Length: 175
Ligand code: AMP
Image (cartoon, rainbow, N blue to C red):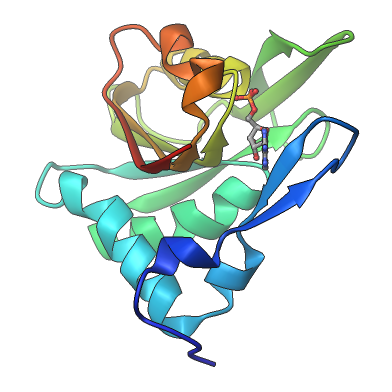
């Protein structure tokens, strides 16, 4: 159902203290469920990469999948899921990143794409940048040529870009 076409990004909702106190969670589900807003955002996220020969769009579990998949279709590319440890059935490569307490690991199939493929990495939110940096490291371990890293939302005050040196980072809205 279409609620508005004015500013799709205005549909993103702030949810204070989720999943824990002090975090303002950016809820993109109202944007995703609005047909016109969803289409506009996928078009705007894809636009810088049109005609750039992107072969693979890699999305980070799980909200990254919701953006990477329609972007891949739009760009005429394949889609690759980067998943949390233990979810993929065949041989994987992995990359780990630090959390506030401990660490997390993401994985992709070793044969997810041909070495040298032009790959775009996508996630919904760039916060501290740890997840995306691990995503880039993983794609490079797989032999990918990372052409860019795209986010719907960037939390500028957390300076996640500093964890992505040398990468072309693109986001639609910065808070
Ligand atoms: P980071 O590794 O700190 O850049 O965190 C990025 C990951 O955590 C992304 O996969 C986001 O989906 C999620 N994330 C971090 N902060 C938020 C937030 N304020 N609202 C929604 N998702 C977030």
